[in-house]
Length: 316
Ligand code: UDP
Ligand code: MG
Figure 1 (cartoon, rainbow, N blue to C red):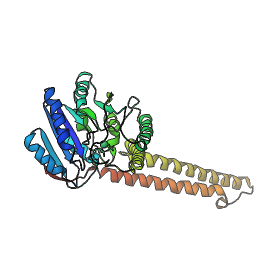
Figure 2: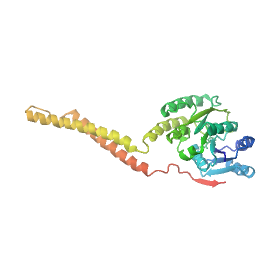
Figure 3: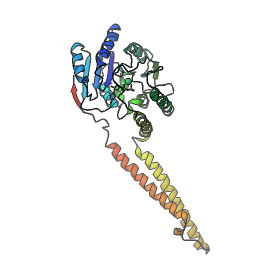
Figure 4: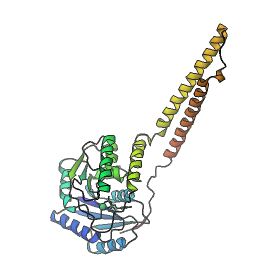
């Protein structure tokens, strides 16, 4: 199979017939063998019914329905696991992304050896309250991740070589950082393609204004987890040991000075009367605490390999 189109959706009943028909037109026009995987992220409207109906006349469609809303990342992850095409394309369900971009995305993966081609909505049809924070988000992510050639990390329209989607795990709110996940997994040929973007045709955005707070917290956690998530002991343990060592040396110094004053017969204050003593005590205690925190985090992280815990209700 040439292409798997993975579409996460939440309450998108109006768009689905138009979207799947548009994809069919593009695919048959280019003679691609394809599948469309519609992942219903627990919609409360009739989206699932629509998917069942569409499936009866469009055999390339598959549907996966979550028992409740688990978020776009979980939906993408399920779609990635199911995808069989050589190239996997993701797009939003709301007709903001254009299926007309599929052939060029496919060619970029097949001919220029790209691992991931990310869409760039150079001309966006979203309100300013969204585009301005997005600019900031992109520039921070660009600098922190070292992927300097991307302008638009969070574009829903992307193409992947099959290996990429089978090697990464998209969880939590990580759908905003998939190029970063890919880079960490060793896929370094990440490219960008300017894509057409349309205003949302039906319904409203499924992410509230809280998206930016969430996005920012994710940004902090992604780099923290990315660097230390697998080995928390390296992070907490290092600071803990450093703090402990500082405290230990201060204590040694105080004891040494005390012994010297005894040997020389000079007057020297009690160790416990000196501020430095309390500093060393604090450093030793904090060091021990941090070390133990690292130890616990290490135990927890080893026992929680299952990050995605979603429940699938139906598959067609
Ligand atoms: N979406 C989803 N689960 C959610 C929220 C959104 O699967 O919990 C889907 C949504 O149906 C759409 C895509 O993710 O297909 C992008 O969402 P939306 O268009 O609301 O985001 P925006 O364009 O405002 O960034
Ligand atoms: Mg949208």
